[in-house]
Length: 191
Image (cartoon, rainbow, N blue to C red; front, side, top):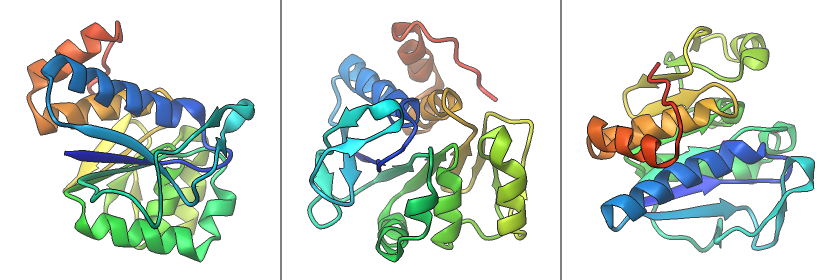
């Protein structure tokens, strides 16, 4: 299974590093064939929040097929206004089995026309704006993550870890997701 995490300048660090840790820990424990990687628009370092520099494994033009696409949040405004980013998210989501967002990554999924009429969530601070910009969405305010069909969205930052553990459960078992959380010494909030 190929797990592609989309990163960009000013992304929230834990939004991408949390899911990466969950899936790479699960891969190590199961000794399975999960391939966890970062994708950016270009093959150059991404400067996330706080000046955290990270090198993507792949770019939009060169990456493996994505089975699980995770779009992270942070200061998403520049990405929201880039046609090539929204088009790539839309195209990648159409061939993925599951699509997820952490925090304000939900704005990018909504802009890519993927969430029509779905139950979704985002960081508590951005929920009203998401509902105003996309009135066809049912923005849920009291959940750390929300699943609707193949789409799953989470609240901000650490909520992405909870959502990622849920994705591990969906891809394997609930017991294995609990084992992954235990290995990480993380208290999994299942809802």
